Length: 226
Image (tube, rainbow, N blue to C red; front, side, top):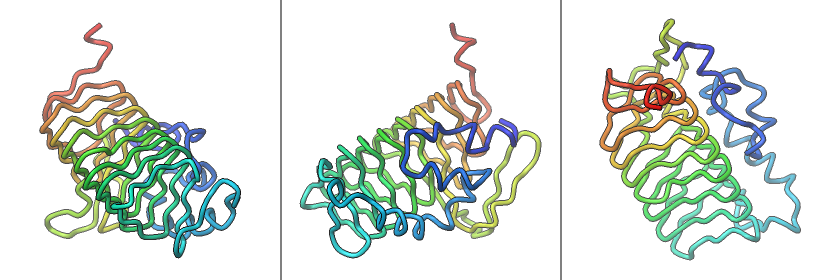
């Protein structure tokens, strides 16, 4: 994956998120992380009160959403139409949960945009990340958002590195990506649309769209299997 392929327009169909106008301001997805909190507050205050219920400070829940009473919700937060926040989910704040999305048991969210129909249903940590339409993270898979040496995160594209300027940057997962159970997406991981990642993978760098990620250095294009 080259630098061009890491752009927002290459990874995401912006018709499937309330963050379309916000994301359109940026070239690369990690550039949007800094302002997610302020964006959610501004958007939340503009939402139709007939559709969204305000619960506490800077928390807006669509009236069709199913939020379990054991879930912990901290703002700024927007939960979209028909979304589900399940038992003991932990939303730390600065989260946009798209329409039809599922946030499951013991899943933790922090500073994220989840497009419509994203599924993070079982024991996931998603921080400082953006997940595209219908992206799915298998049970126990997580985004790692801080390097062990605590230095700034870089994006490792084929044609050179891109500086994010951020100490915290998780994963940027394209539309309809499938992440296998127990996988770890290292800081600054970018995964192109429709790619599948094998279970128990340690993923770093940028992975092409329409690929099957088996292990580091072994990635097959799906069309080669047809």
